[in-house]
Image (cartoon, rainbow, N blue to C red; front, side, top):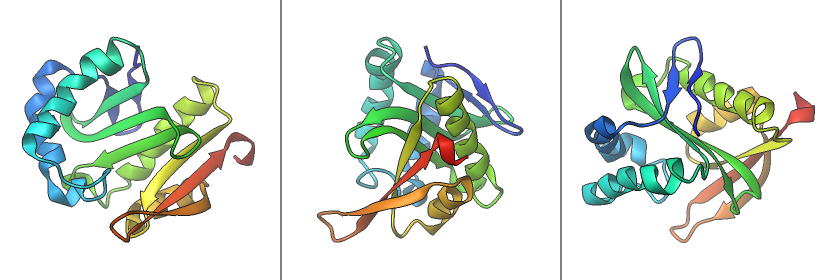
Length: 169
């Protein structure tokens, strides 16, 4: 079961059915979704994604997915999950545009990294970041992630694969 995590300003907790509208609005913001996966998706795809979280993730304890809240408002999305792309557990996070530039990305990523090492017992955590996403790359560097390789994408862009090893902390 996905636990509730707290940092100085954020609460990470499992989504509730009532979060659907906020989740969809968050994923529909092109300023945010351009950095996620393959970029913006149709609204109906984001709505279907939201409803798949409950049976496919929470009900099976497949991995951890959180609604990220500041003062009760949804300001982000976060996950830590096994993935073949990076070869282990991957940190995934995104913040609403209104939350950018206030250090919340570092706070959020640090909270998930601590959980991965301390509670899940991981020895390393990976991240994949679009090479143009300098803000997220700066957060990863600040936390000590090291650049492992660049993976080219079909559209000509590049995804950076980064790793943080527990023994390097």
